[in-house]
Image (tube, rainbow, N blue to C red; front, top):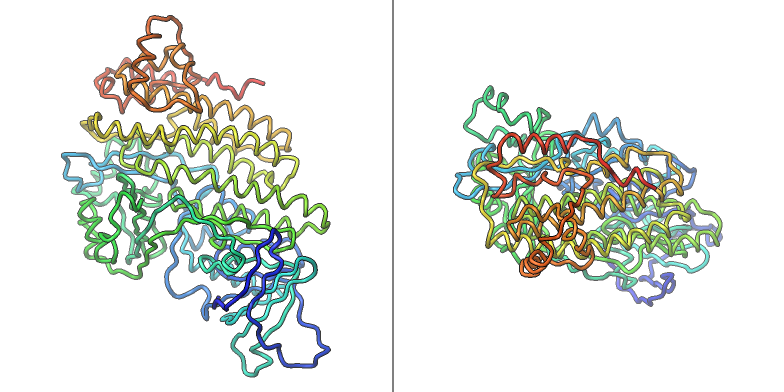
Length: 634
């Protein structure tokens, strides 16, 4: 929206916000201004999705405003990849499954690729890679944001309870602590009475994205410790990375590593080509491919990808397999962000205003959390809008704000502390497996069971989440320090390493959790207790693995005294400390029995790469055996 000059006064409710006065609409003085139940400012993904959510479930009158003359805008929109939570919201909550399957592309999980020193890296099969071979139980999608938003706008405006105005200029919002909010704006029309509007609304929701119409005027914006940027473009046609090779079609089809990688179309994944502090995405859309790099500004010179041409040159130089394809592609559109992460002091208010999408908080594109943040905010905002009792809503608001802030802040260390870990496959396996297990357990499972809008669930959930947060705060610098140690002491594998994250038992258990639906708050809290123990096992295993790698001593992994002596919230990656502890404890007897295969990371150990079939058979047998999981205990 066009930003008028304003005078603001901060308070908890947002009362006192005053915008530039706009001349009242012409007409009889006695005529009351039109009234809406909800005014949504901004018709991007967040605003359109919230409108759809409300229109599906209520008969409330919705006013939808946008500053653009054309919605969606003609320029291609970035942010195409979804993961489980956001995909579930779009397909199941917003009932868009048919559109998503007909007009968008089904997504095949996330895959990550590492260059191998000493190799030309000109062919797909030369890269080490990590993935999850089995498609998720919750379908994900690769979204052309423009076509999806066009469909959402069509569905919303077909409903008589939705009024849409665009382009809107000189928007003035006056929030009231009690009573209705007022909005004034101009739009196109044949006469003054058709161009100047004065309306009231019970709720105002800002979804204006980076314009942050309300947050800026209310002094709610907060900086983020994440300092990352991005440069991206779209090219015509499909960039099928599996065909970037000297192999013929039959040779591609008959490669022996299909036993590990599977036969599903790999180009449907969000494919990440990674290095220290950066990753390059390849995302397929209908008739085009999205390509872009995200980088830590402290580790990556932004100038080298500052233009579309520079971005193309950079990726062909860093990952030579793309030189086979990209130079002949037509660039359709491009864009960049020098910085995109930010926080917000408040996003929901008992005074009936709220912020969703990039109008509130955003972290980082890695793992595609943008759609998740929209889904979480819209779900809680929608529940507040449907809560008629003022006292009940007043009780919910601080709970919801604390929940939303906690879920957002839990993302931050992953991006602000350990982005360098992208530079090594083994270190990244530890980082991503941990973060994905947490995501499945504490994000996806509660969301699909409608538990985040159950006040009885939220406080106990936050207590468990805080305990997990202390472990995560210790693990992120541990992962980074392990990576930095490997830079100095690691040895590259002699052949590509192909690794499925779900070989690590606790991740399998976490993924199975979100198969559980229809559970009560009490049942869910019991399940979270058990799965919190599962995550603690995973954290302890990664600490032990890091120590065993630093010491070059595989026995550390199953040495009871050493493993039990690891403190999940304090143990740092310090080879000298590990060496001292091992010298003191090595002679003690007793085996630590893991509830999963502790040999699963042997492909990354130089001291285990030459082990014969007998050892691999033992590891396979352990991996397939029933887990002595904490989920079976109460």
